[in-house]
Image 1 (cartoon, rainbow, N blue to C red):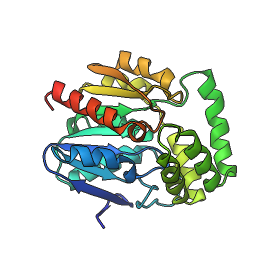
Image 2: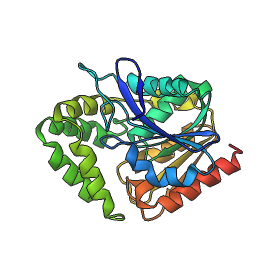
Image 3: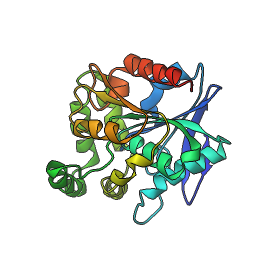
Image 4: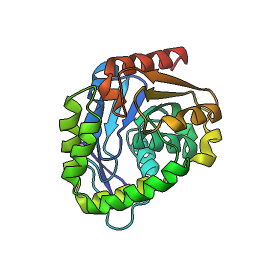
Length: 259
């Protein structure tokens, strides 16, 4: 089992294929298995890398308060460990935000960004400023199995198999760990950093993804050399809801930018 021993953490990862490095980072409460359709498709031409963010899947979580800055540091350290000088970073939701922050903090390591259903803040408007603290509080009270069932049902409209995967991923995280992780995730904010991203960037949004819709045009206007594309028949689990259209969009973006 490939494990990278990072900064007081063990990070699980998988590498498949050869070519330019294409690194996928999963959403909060999920794991590397989220990207199976993309790995199967892109590993024919690229060196694909998937990994489990600390506290998720097969990666460990150190004791104490979770520092969200460790997420991008872990990714940069993993790239160094794999002797990857520069990579295309693709992430969904939290994974997109980690990829975005990596491009800000380690710009020389990022050739391009693909941000799927990605928030750059959890305080974008009055609704988020009111709802997110309530959601953070509810994470203390709600069992992981119930959280997984609720999210799994909500995000399986277009792909029924999403529900079993989401519930399984949720159950793999101890509740005490999730409370610490979610507290850190919901405090991440890159509002002042969007104009620091200069690599080619594509934003992908599921047409039914109301969770992040309000932030996408704002990001596209403020990230130089960026584009926004809507994925049909997809909600927040965009790459699993419509993998063929997501794969085609990513492939076209990389070809257009000669990456």
